[in-house]
Image 1: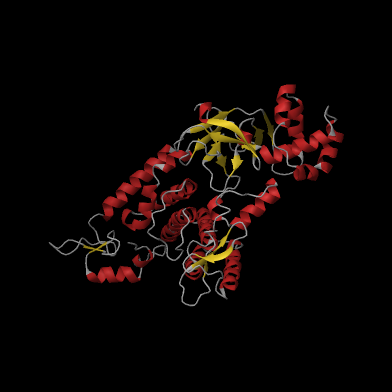
Image 2 (image 1 turned 30 degrees about the horizontal axis):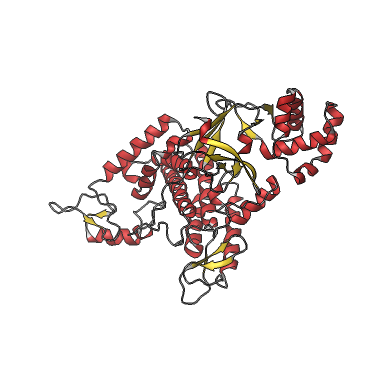
Length: 472
């Protein structure tokens, strides 16, 4: 890492920011910085603010000036007036109520969760401020990720996408940035960070909320355009959703909430809802992606309650978990790539891997590893195979990544030369038939090819017919 790869710049709208001074490749460390101040920051109560103000008062004058020079949103500062008065009365610090008020706003807008090394179970959460790191702004399509979970105990920013010379360096304030609508992201950032996001993604069509077009002869979808652009169909250019589309969306939203609120997750029911939502609204619709998240979270909870003797149920739950995680990642690839074809699980556009999806694929790969080699759906295995290189960027367990790599290799070898429907090796001396459309699936007989097109393999609840995946 060299500081020559970025420079401090000032924008009339965005204020101070960092720009690259040369091209930067994914995986390259852009910034590694020690905190100027850290403090124990409990999740609830005023203790974190008290610890922060006390830690600030222990800094020297130069360090205090660096902290006070950070961005301080006025509206956030005003909201902290009462808290500042209470802290001043309790601590009697050598700074004014107004100073405390501004410092609380600075922490709210600039602080990072800080581990200072590998996370220790049971340790109290900490927060920190960084002189340079605080200048890295938000984007809904970031080119950096950060972590302090490293042996150096420093904040480290690493590139996750190719960065050209002159590009602004950004990271995301949002944890699941490609799974949320533009309106949701902007509302959160206005409420929590006091700014209106104007990144290129927020000003573009909202690809995660497709709705069927209102035009009778059109089979396309309308998307809401950022910047007040309204709804517009990418196929016919029309400007409205089908009459029942918004009502249909509200209905699926309520059904989605039902599965989210269940005490014991119904992962099979949630899987059926995800498919129904995808067929009616589009597989890249945020509710389909949200339902898949509900499923993966539910699978983790169900696995904790299953007894060792329930092996058959466990295998089914694991298969559903793998499908939900990996399919969700594949759908978010299409959202990130601006896919205009939300119908079906695949689109054939080849949008490419997305860093923010790598962790879901990793977890899905761990689930696939619990299944037999021939039980692993080819389509899911191939998605995992594409992400093996990207997994290195998210500091995952090397042992687990090696295990997933081995799993992909074993699955490919087990399915090589075998029928994708019945597992047979084909007629003697005849070889296998190949799907003429996608040229990826192979079958021993015409009957198996027809059967696979219409339905999944027997007993495989987390698989879909080949027509759901087939693409040119």
